[in-house]
Amino acid sequence: MRQATHTLHIRSPGRGLIEFTREVRAWTSAQGIQQGMLTLFCRHTSASLLIQENAAPEVRSDLEAFFEQLAPEDETRYAHDDEGPDDMPAHARSALTKTSESIPITAGRLALGTWQAIYLWEHRHRPHRRELVVQVCGRA
Amino acid sequence: MRQATHTLHIRSPGRGLIEFTREVRAWTSAQGIQQGMLTLFCRHTSASLLIQENAAPEVRSDLEAFFEQLAPEDETRYAHDDEGPDDMPAHARSALTKTSESIPITAGRLALGTWQAIYLWEHRHRPHRRELVVQVCGRA
Amino acid sequence: MRQATHTLHIRSPGRGLIEFTREVRAWTSAQGIQQGMLTLFCRHTSASLLIQENAAPEVRSDLEAFFEQLAPEDETRYAHDDEGPDDMPAHARSALTKTSESIPITAGRLALGTWQAIYLWEHRHRPHRRELVVQVCGRA
Image (cartoon, rainbow over all chains, first blue to last red; front, side, top):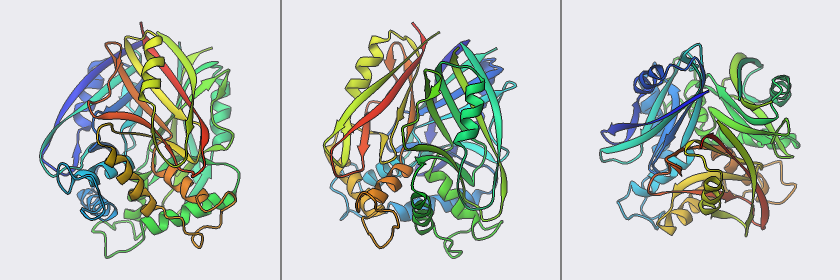
């Protein structure tokens, strides 16, 4: 049984869903695991993970609009605004989405469904450099 | 250390929580793992996983009503409606619930709490055939 | 490859985010894993897990207020109220947050980001004794 860990650095241009399936696939393939598990971990509290639809771009803009309505930037609602009006909504959006995800590897490939892609969801308006830890565990 | 992977096919009759704890337990027991981890992965973006209350059926109907209010079918809100008015709410509901879950195995059994059951949450109105990948990793 | 499993018992004084990073770190360190994965599992359906901001206490009170507004105690909305008006909102809040989380271990330490802490989110008003299963899998 082999285990390998790596940190992917993803630059976000600001709020929105940034796909990084290709980076995850490339690193995973290089580890030579035939059967096992890939685990993703997001090291932030104002950005998160989401596995979602890879085809229609409107799904991403609709999800963005849905979350903006769910956790609005309303300064009267929050005590915490150290870093501006998008600070507390970013924590709320992170709480509602994923910090870690696990994806099985079968026959040397991630067992993602046909329509699934892996996204970093940046919840802050300004660009950020985000760290995602990836780990595989399995058999060559 | 042993690792085994399998795909469970679950038929959903349409929107709602479909329990499949029994199917997961049956497959897990057959793998003969005494201590380890079970990981579940949902290969869809309009259906998701939920570990929730197994006793009172009203919890399931109340959760359904809660999510219908949280992500309503309102065509004026969404640009993406390729597959009908339940299409985009299904993606939102999936984003808010789980794509993967991990449950420890101790003394040969899933360490679920007394009141916990494993559900597939179908978010589309029409029946679907859904694929859930299950993987165990541990010692016999 | 080593694997170890343990149950942490955390007492909650009632609704709110209770940090237990220290307890997780202490147990993890004692297992002597240099590289691997820690998985957390919450054995309840009215309490859940959250990895969130560890610095500003207002983030915790703002998250609490955000979730109280998202899943209000409104008895007219729910059929299920066996244990009082906070019963069904507790299930909704659990469904929206985490039952399991996985955190990589690198160089003998949890790969949490600088601002991340591990919380049990108690969703019921009364004090509870909660069970969190922790498991490590990796190399010494």
